Figure (cartoon, rainbow, N blue to C red):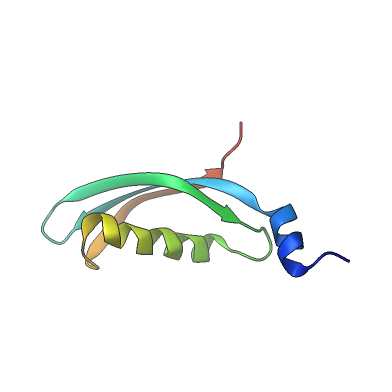
Length: 76
């Protein structure tokens, strides 16, 4: 019987995300990347929070507004 980590690895889907934010002082930044998620385990909301937390490092502040967010499977 496969372990839970093997099951997650087998069912994980790679998503491509894009996020644009604007800081309180008017600066804007856009970044993108890939993130693995397991449908039925991870949600759009939890993935959004992970990406938003990553953007804190990009703009070097916790105070920003998300202007744009896209999350789609990374396949054609």
